[in-house]
Length: 250
Ligand SMILES: C[S@@+](CC[C@H](N)C(=O)[O-])C[C@H]1O[C@@H](n2cnc3c(N)ncnc32)[C@H](O)[C@@H]1O
Image (cartoon, rainbow, N blue to C red; front, top):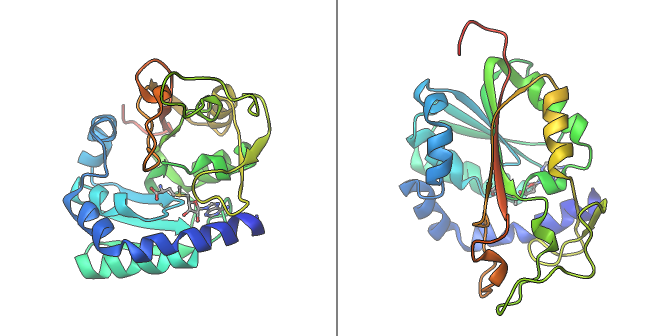
C-alpha cells in the first residue's frame, strides 16, 4: 500500500502539469463515454448523489454533474489528486467535494449515495474484492447503483506489439498481481482479479447485476503505443452495473 501510494503521489504531478487540458476535458464532459451515458441514463435522470471511488484526476466528476448528478464526493488516497480536483471544482463552480482516504474504509455514512462510480484503472489497486464490494454496498441507499467501467481482467495478458497481438510470457490470467509497467509505474504493484471473482464479490455483497458488457476498445491508450491487441478482436475493457435492491423501484 505504501509503495503504491508513493507511486500515485508522484504520478499525480501529471494532473498538476496538465491542469488546463484536463479541466477543459472535464468542462466539456467528453471524458464520460457514450457507453457510460447510455448505461447510466436512468440513474443520472434521477439526479443522484454520487460517490466517485478512487476519483484520481476527477475529470468524470464534472461530466457526471453536467449529465445530471446532484453532487459528487470523490475519494482517493493521493493528496495531489485531491488538491487538484478541489481546485477544479471551485474554479468550475460544480457541487463536487473531495476526501483523502485509503480505500476500502470510506469515512462516509452508510446509505449516503445513489450511485458509486468507479473504474478507469481503479479495481487493480483493490487487493480484497470482498472488502471493496461490501464497503460500496454499505454506502448505497436501497435502489442505489454501483457502476464500474475498467480494464478487462484479461487485458494485462496482451502484448503491445503493433504487428499482431501476443500473449505476454510473463503474465498469467490467474496470477495474484504484477508490477505495473505503464502508469503510475514507480514500483506500484497492481492486483489481478478474474471476471468471475469480480462478479461473485459484487453479488455476495448483496448487489444484483443489471448489466455486464465486455469491450474491444481499451478504457485508456498509453500515449505513443499502437497495439494490435486493440484492433477489435480481444477484450480490453468491461462495464458492470449492479443495483442494491430493497425499494419499490425497478
Ligand atoms: C487510474 S487512477 C483513477 C481512476 C479515476 N477513475 C480516474 O479516471 O482518474 C487510480 C486512483 O486510485 C487511487 N488509489 C489507488 N489505491 C488506492 C487506495 N487503496 N485507496 C484510495 N485511493 C487509491 C490512486 O491515487 C489513483 O488516483
